[in-house]
Length: 421
Ligand code: HAM
Image 1 (cartoon, rainbow, N blue to C red):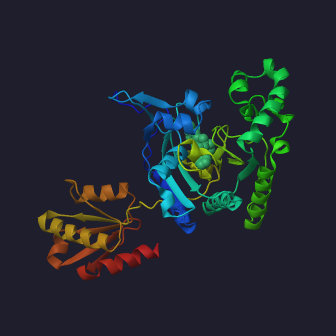
Image 2: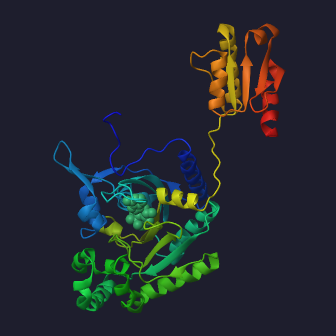
């Protein structure tokens, strides 16, 4: 065993596992295009200040979970713990507003958080996210939630629940926080360590504590303390979701772990996952762009955790086909056979057939064994006999049947055979 092993909380994705990633990413890209989103790629590394300012100095992410280091010139840099702050920075820096408003962007990529690794929780994990800049209309919030519903349904998932809430504007939230503090104050000595710490830094997080569930059950609801504008926004959001036909529940305990949210907050939970059951989260952030020194620009977005989504797909036993199955193996003998095989592989690949050409020093028997190993149903043989006759042989590896074929008809016949399957 080599000393070079992967870092705790990271993973290698390969083999059969890869088909799930492709399934999810291809379906997402296809649907994003249908919803008229455009892809954006931003760096995985940013100035630390972007996240402390954007995500919030008091959040767990910034306080405890960032991979931060000084570069050779002593500048503090951070591996992005999430995508929204980076995309907002890119929106400002590249004046994306000049391309029209709203801007609808999506991204897929790795995020880094120094959390305690466990099932469904990694230190490097992938998010598939979307952000809309430049509209404060609740239709934008509704469209994003409808996208998630559409996307999960396209993946054939069914056992998930969309939970929505409004956490109001910054101002209305301050009032609510005071009320919440009063409620929790007498309970505090009996609450968990995290709750005790968050009581002063971010009291709303006490509501979604998984340990002290009882305490939050009777807590005052933020929905009773919303300002008029947030109330109206939330009502309209629900109205649009109803028209879209998106099922959801209102859950006033959804508070989210990032500071930039205003008004809408939502999460999607999968009912077959254990502790890490939240597969998507998002909400509105009308002050973020301004906080990052951009022009006042409302925004709303979400991110889906790809590892958790794939886990959910597996839990629901959804059949996912691999797109990597080799369709044809080309085996040959001798130099002439090799040259013919090479030309044939070029031709079949051009025609779209997934072709494995023997590229090792195997004899014919070894090549058959290898084709078997790869689970390939058809082997095209170009041996000495085939060369002298000017033909090729197609062997069906499942039933041993061999067909001699004119060289010019190989593609047509192999296609026919593949379609027979
Ligand atoms: P978040 O809730 O921190 O939101 O993360 C979104 C999703 O990423 C989570 O629901 C979860 O599925 C996944 N996730 C988070 N941490 C981990 C981890 N350590 N391991 C595996 N999966 C994880 C955001 O990041 C916001 N930027 C979402 C957003 C976009 N809000 C507005 N726009």
